[in-house]
Image 1 (cartoon, rainbow, N blue to C red):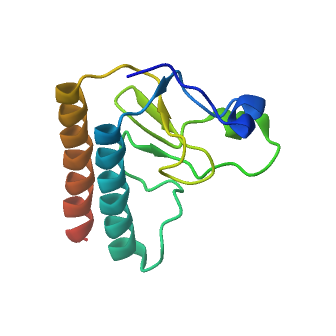
Image 2 (spheres, rainbow, N blue to C red; image 1 turned 45 degrees about the vertical axis):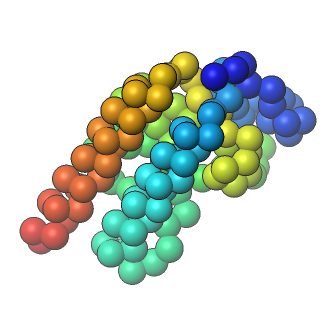
Length: 126
Protein backbone atom coordinates (compact mmCIF):
# COMPACT_ATOMS: atom_id res chain seq x y z
CA UNK A 1 0.00 0.00 0.00
CA UNK A 2 1.39 3.38 -0.91
CA UNK A 3 0.75 6.94 0.14
CA UNK A 4 -2.17 8.50 -1.68
CA UNK A 5 -1.44 10.84 -4.56
CA UNK A 6 -4.75 12.67 -4.93
CA UNK A 7 -6.27 13.95 -8.12
CA UNK A 8 -6.34 17.74 -8.40
CA UNK A 9 -9.95 18.01 -7.19
CA UNK A 10 -9.22 15.79 -4.21
CA UNK A 11 -6.17 17.83 -3.29
CA UNK A 12 -8.14 21.08 -3.47
CA UNK A 13 -11.05 19.86 -1.37
CA UNK A 14 -9.29 17.38 0.93
CA UNK A 15 -11.59 14.49 0.03
CA UNK A 16 -9.06 11.70 0.41
CA UNK A 17 -7.40 9.52 3.03
CA UNK A 18 -3.72 8.82 3.63
CA UNK A 19 -3.25 5.57 1.65
CA UNK A 20 -4.11 4.50 -1.86
CA UNK A 21 -6.24 1.35 -1.98
CA UNK A 22 -4.80 -1.74 -3.63
CA UNK A 23 -6.78 -3.62 -6.28
CA UNK A 24 -7.84 -6.39 -3.88
CA UNK A 25 -9.21 -3.77 -1.46
CA UNK A 26 -11.02 -2.06 -4.34
CA UNK A 27 -12.64 -5.37 -5.29
CA UNK A 28 -13.75 -6.09 -1.73
CA UNK A 29 -15.29 -2.65 -1.36
CA UNK A 30 -17.12 -2.93 -4.68
CA UNK A 31 -18.57 -6.27 -3.54
CA UNK A 32 -19.71 -4.66 -0.29
CA UNK A 33 -21.30 -1.75 -2.13
CA UNK A 34 -23.22 -4.20 -4.32
CA UNK A 35 -24.41 -6.17 -1.28
CA UNK A 36 -25.48 -3.06 0.62
CA UNK A 37 -27.27 -1.86 -2.51
CA UNK A 38 -29.12 -5.19 -2.82
CA UNK A 39 -30.24 -5.07 0.82
CA UNK A 40 -31.26 -1.43 0.48
CA UNK A 41 -33.31 -2.22 -2.64
CA UNK A 42 -35.08 -5.09 -0.90
CA UNK A 43 -36.03 -2.82 1.99
CA UNK A 44 -36.91 0.40 0.11
CA UNK A 45 -37.60 -0.71 -3.48
CA UNK A 46 -35.37 2.06 -4.80
CA UNK A 47 -31.78 2.51 -5.88
CA UNK A 48 -29.26 3.22 -3.14
CA UNK A 49 -27.13 6.34 -3.63
CA UNK A 50 -24.83 5.92 -0.63
CA UNK A 51 -27.11 7.65 1.86
CA UNK A 52 -27.44 6.28 5.38
CA UNK A 53 -28.63 2.67 5.34
CA UNK A 54 -29.49 2.23 9.01
CA UNK A 55 -26.99 -0.62 9.31
CA UNK A 56 -25.45 -0.31 12.78
CA UNK A 57 -21.83 0.84 12.67
CA UNK A 58 -21.80 1.42 8.91
CA UNK A 59 -21.24 4.97 7.71
CA UNK A 60 -22.08 5.70 4.09
CA UNK A 61 -22.07 9.07 2.36
CA UNK A 62 -22.42 10.05 -1.28
CA UNK A 63 -19.63 12.10 -2.80
CA UNK A 64 -20.21 15.74 -1.85
CA UNK A 65 -20.52 17.80 -5.01
CA UNK A 66 -21.11 21.01 -3.09
CA UNK A 67 -19.01 23.45 -1.16
CA UNK A 68 -19.95 22.25 2.34
CA UNK A 69 -16.52 21.72 3.91
CA UNK A 70 -17.75 19.36 6.64
CA UNK A 71 -19.53 16.98 4.27
CA UNK A 72 -16.62 16.92 1.82
CA UNK A 73 -14.18 15.46 4.32
CA UNK A 74 -16.53 12.75 5.64
CA UNK A 75 -15.62 9.25 4.47
CA UNK A 76 -17.81 7.75 1.78
CA UNK A 77 -17.75 4.33 3.46
CA UNK A 78 -16.58 3.49 6.97
CA UNK A 79 -16.84 0.57 9.35
CA UNK A 80 -14.87 -0.50 12.42
CA UNK A 81 -12.26 2.25 12.11
CA UNK A 82 -11.59 1.80 8.39
CA UNK A 83 -12.53 4.95 6.44
CA UNK A 84 -12.67 4.90 2.64
CA UNK A 85 -13.08 7.86 0.31
CA UNK A 86 -13.36 8.09 -3.45
CA UNK A 87 -13.30 10.88 -6.00
CA UNK A 88 -16.76 11.53 -7.44
CA UNK A 89 -17.65 7.84 -7.99
CA UNK A 90 -16.77 4.54 -6.26
CA UNK A 91 -13.73 3.01 -7.90
CA UNK A 92 -12.13 6.32 -8.83
CA UNK A 93 -9.04 7.37 -6.88
CA UNK A 94 -10.07 5.46 -3.77
CA UNK A 95 -8.15 5.97 -0.56
CA UNK A 96 -8.19 4.60 2.98
CA UNK A 97 -7.05 5.85 6.37
CA UNK A 98 -5.10 2.71 7.38
CA UNK A 99 -2.53 0.37 5.93
CA UNK A 100 -4.04 -3.11 5.98
CA UNK A 101 -2.59 -6.44 4.91
CA UNK A 102 -4.51 -8.72 2.57
CA UNK A 103 -5.61 -10.82 5.56
CA UNK A 104 -6.74 -7.72 7.47
CA UNK A 105 -8.76 -6.60 4.45
CA UNK A 106 -10.40 -10.02 4.26
CA UNK A 107 -11.25 -9.99 7.97
CA UNK A 108 -12.69 -6.47 7.69
CA UNK A 109 -14.71 -7.48 4.62
CA UNK A 110 -16.33 -10.35 6.51
CA UNK A 111 -17.09 -8.11 9.51
CA UNK A 112 -18.93 -5.67 7.27
CA UNK A 113 -20.67 -8.48 5.40
CA UNK A 114 -21.82 -10.03 8.70
CA UNK A 115 -23.21 -6.65 9.81
CA UNK A 116 -25.07 -6.18 6.52
CA UNK A 117 -26.56 -9.67 6.62
CA UNK A 118 -27.53 -9.39 10.31
CA UNK A 119 -29.34 -6.14 9.48
CA UNK A 120 -31.07 -7.79 6.54
CA UNK A 121 -32.17 -10.73 8.66
CA UNK A 122 -33.55 -8.36 11.31
CA UNK A 123 -35.46 -6.42 8.64
CA UNK A 124 -36.93 -9.64 7.25
CA UNK A 125 -38.50 -10.35 10.64
CA UNK A 126 -40.79 -7.30 10.33
